[in-house]
Image (tube, rainbow, N blue to C red):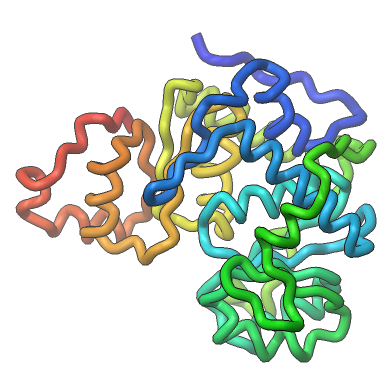
Length: 292
């Protein structure tokens, strides 16, 4: 029997539910995320979220302020996302395949005061970061330039203890931008209770996800599809997820599936078509771990 739907109180902080709860309920030592050789536990995510949250507060970020995330899939994305939510700020994950003009639009439209960026993405995002009207601080995951903050150093100096902000279930938790196919991208506002409602309606009742599952999504975390499938769905029940920052070609996806042996795999139609065209895949790869 799977976990029952959650009862959401009026005063509710999504980070406390998706992160802190696992430590309180004794899952601190359980693996939460796999990436390459890294295995990150729920306890480590809890500490990273607290450090990022405190580090953002130290930069002057206040409740409701936006924090732009231009991040490749990895534990740093999770820590930055919930690290912004926990003290009441609003993370805004954006597509990592965009051009400089798009990043400039995201920065100015969201009025983000802080941007957290993966180093390889600075080639395209760098000019936008330098020109953004409201931006005050840039944090870089990887090697940082002199005028930027280096993520690990910046977060490690902050306290690992942080109480969640006294937010309402109807307060804004995060934004996701639309694809912009009908004009400029539009920021879609998501509330603190939304991830719980989505998880309970789909992940629990349709997928039947439990803490024994391990997820892998070819869609990246900046997509609504990937954000649920590979982050807050598994975090809803204390399950595990496999994070992959590379390009999800059919060959790469098959290799990830065999190496990490997830039970739930989420793709898109074009990827499934490419995978089906690999006629030797059935002989080369063991997919017996998958149930969906």
